[in-house]
Image (cartoon, rainbow, N blue to C red):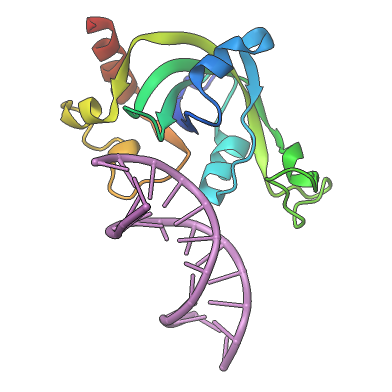
Length: 159
DNA sequence: GCCAACGTTGGC
DNA sequence: GCCAACGTTGGC
C-alpha cells in the first residue's frame, strides 16, 4: 500500500436512511446511491478508496449530528438507480456503457460513543475549516482532514 | 457564454 | 414552514 487512508463524511436525512437503518442491514453494508451532484460524484468515483473511514452524519435531525463511523468496502462503480426508470433517482442521461453517477459500498463500523452535534462541532477549536461547517456547504459527500478526524474522535471519546 | 428562473438542500 | 445558499437548466 502506497496511499494513506483518507477520511470522509457522508450525510443522510434521518427520516430516509438513519444510522439505525444502516446498523440493521445484513452485514451492515449499503450502496451509497442516489448522489446527484458532480463534485460528490467525483469523490465517489475517483477518490474514496477501500479502507477509508467515513463519518455518518444525520441531517434534518434534532440535533443534526455525526453519529457513527463506516468504512469504504468497495470502490466506485456505476449507480444502478440511475438506470431504473421506476427509481426516484432515475436519470435518462446516464447509460450503462457511459454512466453519469457512481456509488461506493459502505460498511457500518461503530457508533460514536456519543453523537457530536453540529453546534458542538462549530464550537470546537481546530474544526474551523471543516467543509461541513462552511457557510452554505451542501455537499452530501465531503472530505475530512486527518486532524479533523482525530479531533472529532477524541471529542466523542471524552463523553 | 451570460444569467434569470427554478428546484433542492438543510439549518433553524 | 421558512428561507438562504447553491447547482442546474435553458433562452437568448
